[in-house]
Image (tube, rainbow, N blue to C red; front, side, top):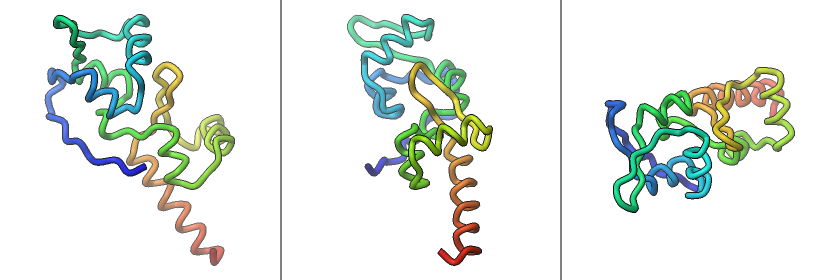
Length: 125
């Protein structure tokens, strides 16, 4: 699945609509509802729900467009779910968990990808 880059303003006071946040984090409306029930701050305006960018940055450790979910992580590196779990347990990759979802910083994934490419070249693959 190809994702497009979404530019977010620099200020942490920026307000994100729920639909945009769902798209950025690849989560359902129900997931965001569970996170709200768990204490995630939000703003309700009639029937629409909004979130402050600063709160989302605190949750994920980065802006939503700077993180990658578990599925994209495994696809990017061509690894199995078991391998990603083993890497997390060994501390080989930093991650942030939000509910049941696991997110990685894109820059960390890029570093691992370049390391893996170097190893493949050394071995002649």
